[in-house]
Length: 162
Image (cartoon, helix red, strand yellow):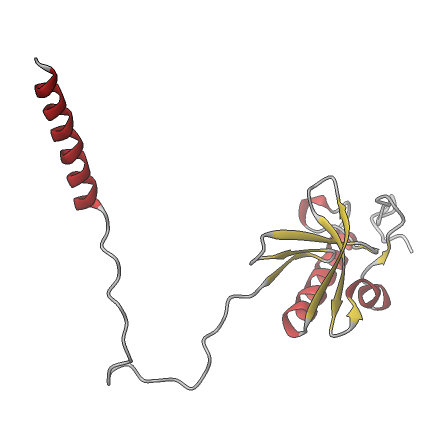
């Protein structure tokens, strides 16, 4: 085959692959105009996806920025299989529910400390409606001050350690 034939054959293969690729691409959705008579206009604003996801009592994720935050000043009981006893699991679930309710119903302000923990979480103060979330959970009996390391929540009998 001459160089010209090889070149034409290569161009043919490229064009064929491009045509097949274009033919198999999904078509974009049609452009939306004003609602028709069958689509009632609503005065309600569209529901926006939640910005924050509470993972547990002392951890939350900013879904828009894809950053996970660990509260700097508290320790909450573990949940799920990480809990050492049922009492810890129950208290951890209550802490998570309380944090979720506060975050979902208030104005959230994150104050990063500039530190990252060993799990890649940004260490931060979380303030909701002007009130520190960690201090709120401590006052509600759902957390304790962070002392620099994890301490047990359960005694040998499966009861919470006061």
